[in-house]
Image (cartoon, rainbow, N blue to C red; front, side):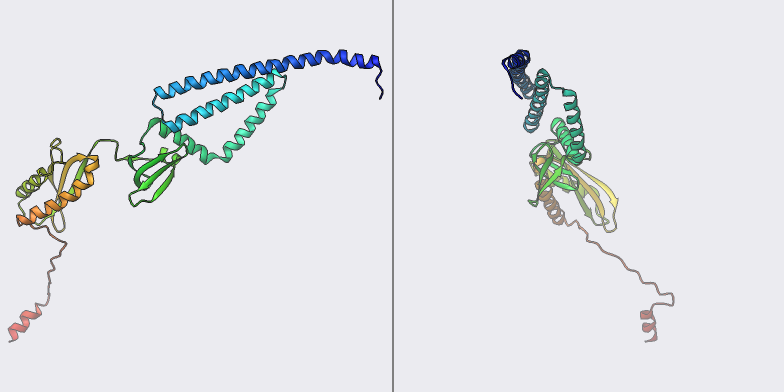
Length: 287
């Protein structure tokens, strides 16, 4: 196909308005881009200040800022496409379908993410706390957006999904500064309980780690199979719980032994019944 001067002039005349429209659209898109980028920077700074004032967890704060920044940039891209005359409705529909497919494929991860957000916002525990959950007892070493890392007391490290933690009971042994120490002591039947109680309380008073308020107490709790069962209760700092327990169990045992109060061991009394008479007595009678 050959072009003469008239044809070429006509094409240029018809194309010129389109070129100008395209250039203007591109210029608008550039302006929208830089203006949107500036607005995004202001929003992120404002969000950062809000997070710092609310004392939000660092890992959650970082994740949320990244998420908000990504969402704002997606909106900026859609605005730029609309400025260039691109139909964004179909694009949004494609994004929605892709988001739905990804959500269905990552149900477990999304549940863990939601659980991580709840944990980091409401803080049922923090790094360094001793917790018990999902049959695991140990110290919290790390809290991520999807998983929490717990180091057990035998030095095993367990990674627990946050979804499971957020939807089940959690026992936090470090939440309160003080803990109640409970010790079970058994003494032989026939023992004077008032004397025993005084010996135990005097033993506890010698330990400076035990708090005077609430005061230590000793309660008679049960007629056991082999002993009279006593419950010994006192309060100490959370960090002293087990040392106080171990030391005073030994001290109470020694104090009771010193006062000749028997700490019984499991035993049974066996009685023989002979309907036809005791064979030993019969042999004696024969003699």
